[in-house]
Image (cartoon, rainbow, N blue to C red; front, side, top):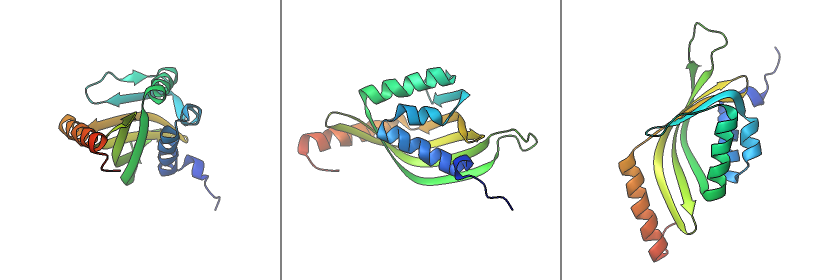
Length: 149
């Protein structure tokens, strides 16, 4: 039995991708994206194509700090079980952190990533705007009082 490369294991791809985002390594994140990748956040337009997604990640890295705490990660079946080339779905439940200066917002996110041939080819994040607002209030209190973190 031949050993499979962890580089193509969907859970490893997703964890490595988020690690690259947290360290601000746009190049490392870009290496894990397919050419036809799409990225959608609820309430925002879908970004399509590697060049556009890498541009958005690069812009994010220039303006904010990104952190993530993955609480659960589940590898599901292929998006279309009848198609052998279909991507595998990886679900994440996590807390994302966005920071500017001393201000940091933490909020719950459920993500659905699609991995094909060792690369992320689709990424959809769902989050509550109310939870994000609560995170902003907590972040302001922490910034003003110096408590937290």
